[in-house]
Length: 167
Image 1 (cartoon, helix red, strand yellow):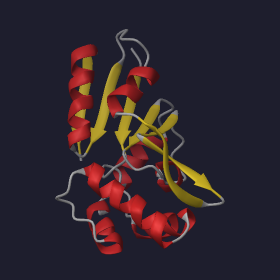
Image 2 (cartoon, rainbow, N blue to C red):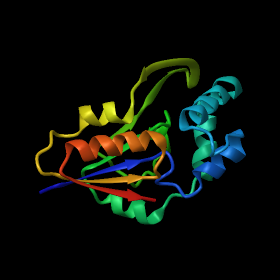
Image 3 (tube, rainbow, N blue to C red):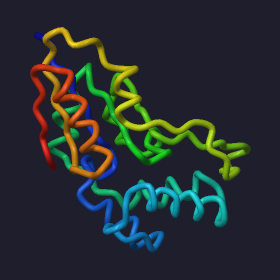
């Protein structure tokens, strides 16, 4: 039996994402994730280029070293996130199977246009990406956000051997 690792990147891989988003962008961790991401995207659209946003956030995030260590040696790790810029934010030592944001923004000349090219739920993404249930063990690393709860339900309903690891 092989093991498939899935890590929610919204807050799971970082120990201070709530603080970073509150300090840099005035977004409270009590807000629903969609609202937080929408506010970030408004900030990016109104205040400059995507690279500036990414460097600000990346410089401030502190990654959970134990989880990064665990995932970096796995050749079957999927990274999923409500953050549209997750591909640029993950630690360079992670080499996942794939990185899947739920929101794909239109970027032209390094600037966010305000247009969303594609939007999916975490469940829809994993339905497309994961192999059909065939005895694989699935480890799902989560911070327990609302969109993660729906994915947990999907995984538990459709796969036999699912372990949910909350960080």
